[in-house]
Length: 167
Image (tube, rainbow, N blue to C red; front, side):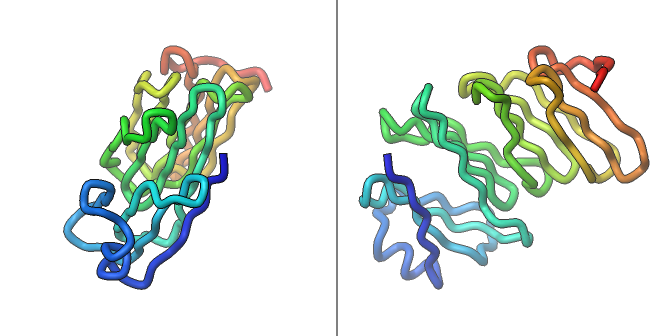
């Protein structure tokens, strides 16, 4: 499966290439515009406000999902059915998609939040009082998060509960 992203100069040009039903316009203000191409054919157009962090794609062959984080949004696209099944407005700015080695657990790390999905469905989420500054997976079982206030946390991927981590 060949997946590509093409940027556009404006919403006007994006709308010329993408039909209305395949266009996602995020929020009241947009500054960046791109289309996702699947095997050379435009699948989806997206307009969003760019906070300085580039969009990130993650393709999971096992379940045929394409995960996409950008701005303050997260999408999960079922490529077999060619439809968006997750369209989540995030509470804070998207940082990165982190996953275990099997890509069954997908963590969405944001400026003040953490979301964990399992096989395309939300498993748990967590908000923080201060900005997330560092994060990493440990042994495909937990995710550690360090915040700007110096507090650090380790959460079980399976349950979202705080755990002790022996690295």
